[in-house]
Image 1 (tube, rainbow, N blue to C red):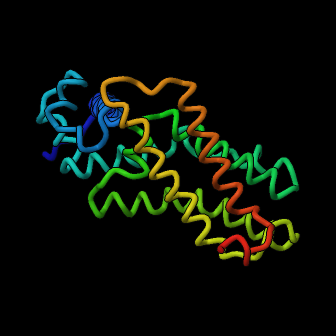
Image 2 (cartoon, rainbow, N blue to C red; image 1 turned 180 degrees about the vertical axis):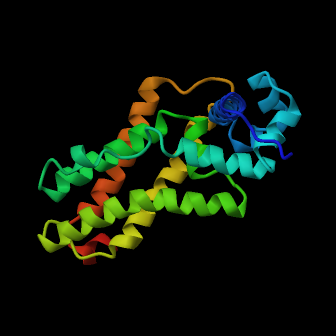
Length: 212
């Protein structure tokens, strides 16, 4: 007779899977994806190495699950707060503040999610994750152009440039090496990134003289 798992068995397996996933998320948040090993996950969760492979086909499969879980947490932007105002400049200011403040207060986790070199399969998840941010900025910029609040520009290129700025900015806290970046330095970094993007997008002066 074929084995049929009982409700108790299924509940036990679910509990183990959640424990392993939480352990993996904790490791990635502190050490990045490249800092995760199956042995570390097993030790952190209090389970055997074999238990990890019972739930996840491979390390990369586990990392994919971790990436998806982590990107559903509080790094995403608050649409309601951003679009409370009908003014594109105010929307842009709020969206940039959210993006940089949420990401740059997270150190290793932000670098892991936005910039750390990862496998091709996880990069596909990353592209979708980053596209969520890009679409918000594209919407704001297009609206600003339509209302003549911003000069005409390629919104999808500008949105990609914003994400590129964030990628570079995530490296800065990591360069503090053995000392955590102080809060006042983080705030200054967040403000500088926000102001750089805001000035670039909303620039409305004489372009001919700007590029001399």
